[in-house]
Image 1 (cartoon, rainbow, N blue to C red):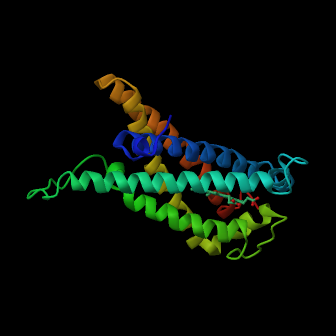
Image 2: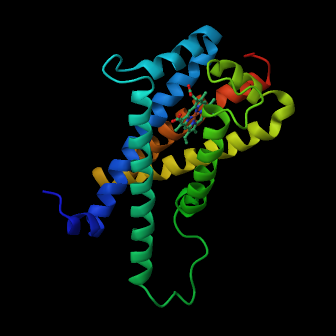
Image 3: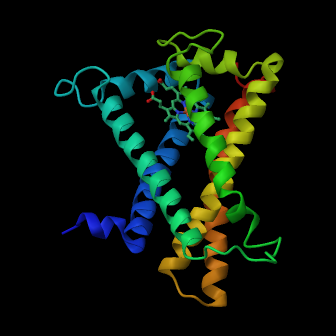
Length: 226
Ligand code: HEM
C-alpha cells in the first residue's frame, strides 16, 4: 500500500517524478503525432481535432475525454514540480553550509538547466493554451478550424511566435534528454556501456521529439504548409 510517508520519502518522491514524467512524455509523443497530420492537409488535421472532442461518445459528453486528459496532465505536472522542488530543498537542507569553492561546471548542460527549462515550459504552456486552445492570442482563433489557427500563428511576419515555440520546444528537448538519461541510467547498468546506451536513448527521444514538433512551425513559415 502507498502511504503518505512513503510518498514523502526521497525514494517515493523520485518514483513520483518518474511516473508523472512518463505520463507527460506519453502525451508529448501522442501530441506530436497528431500535429504531424498538418502535412496531410487541412481536412485531415481538423477532422483529427474534431475526433479528439468526440472520444468516448456517447458514454462521455462532448470534450469529456479532453477534460479527463486535462485533469491527468495537470495532476502529473503538479506532482512533477512538487516532487522536484521538494527533492531540491531536501538536497539543500542536507548541506546547509554551501560549498566555499563550488565548481562552476557541475553535471551536464541539460542537468544544470532543468530548473530554468521548467520555468520556460510552464510559461509556454499558459501561452499555448491561450493561443491554440481558447484562441484568445491567435490571429484567427476559430476553434472549429485548428488548421487555420496553426497556419495564421506561424506566418513569416509572426516570426517571434515561431521563435518562442522554438525556445520552448528546445527547453522540452533538453528537459527530456536529462529525464530519459537519468531514468535509463537508474534502470540500467552503471557501467561505461550502460552510460553510453542511456546517452543514446536520451538523444534519440529528445532529437526525435524536437524535430517532429519544430517541423510544423518551420513548414508554415517556409510556405510548405499553408
Ligand atoms: C510546436 C509545435 C506545436 C503545435 C503546432 C501545437 C499545436 C496544438 C494545437 C493545434 C492544439 C489545440 C488542439 C485542439 O484544441 O483541437 C494544441 C493543444 C495542446 N498542446 Fe500543443 N502544439 C505544439 C507544441 C506543444 C508542446 C511542446 C506542448 C507541451 C509542452 C504542447 C501541449 C499542448 C497541450 C497540453 C494541449 C491541450 C490543451 C487543452 O487541453 O486543450 N503543445 N497544441
